Length: 169
Image (cartoon, rainbow, N blue to C red; front, side, top):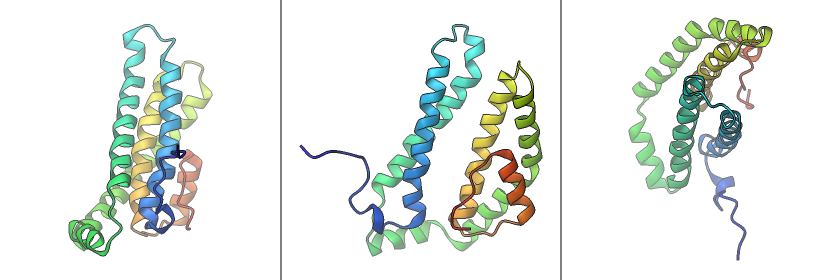
C-alpha cells in the first residue's frame, strides 16, 4: 500500500497561499495536541472552559483550512472562480480590517505575553494571550497572502509578541 502523508501530489505547483495552508495546519495540529494534553489532567469544568474554547477554535479552523487545501482546483477555471470571489474591493477591505485589528490589539498582546510570563498564576492571562495571538496571526496571514507591506515598527512589535512573520519578507 502507498504511504499517505496527506500532502497533495501537486503540492509544489500550488500557489503560495494554498501551499501555506499545509504548514499553518501543521502548526495548528501541534497546538491542538498540546491543548488536548494540557486539558487531560484538569478535572474542574470551570478551569477547562477557556482551553476548550481555544481547542474548539483551533479545531474548526484546522478542518476548514484543510478542506480548502484539499478542494482547491489548480485548473485555470478554478483560478478564475477564485478571482471572481475575491474582488479587489473585498481584498482592500480585508487588508484594511486586518491592519486596523492588528494596530488596536498588538500592544494588548505584548502586555498579555509579559503578564503570562511573569506571574505564576497566569492561566487566565495565558488563555487570553493564546486567543488574541491566534486572531492577530490570522490578520497577519491575510496581509501576507495579499502581499500587503508591513512597517518596520509593526514587524518589531509582532516579533516581540512572538508571532510568526511571513518568510517572503
